[in-house]
Image 1 (cartoon, helix red, strand yellow):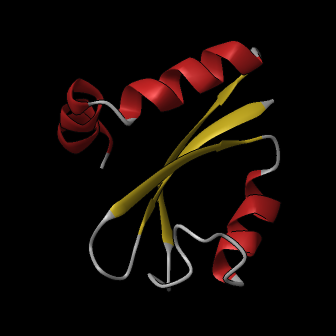
Image 2: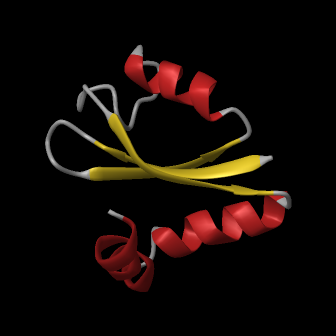
Length: 78
């Protein structure tokens, strides 16, 4: 399985990512190993979804990072 996830950062921003192991990836975020979020701790999962197909997961992650995707995220996912 491939997971697309959204984390809410302590500063109120959101981080969107994709991984095969969401628990391990969250742990890496929490321990400060991810440059994009290490200054924004603590983090909280606000959304995740699973895909069987890796390319579909990465397409959805890319969409969520676009302008239309962020609007969709704000209206429907968080």
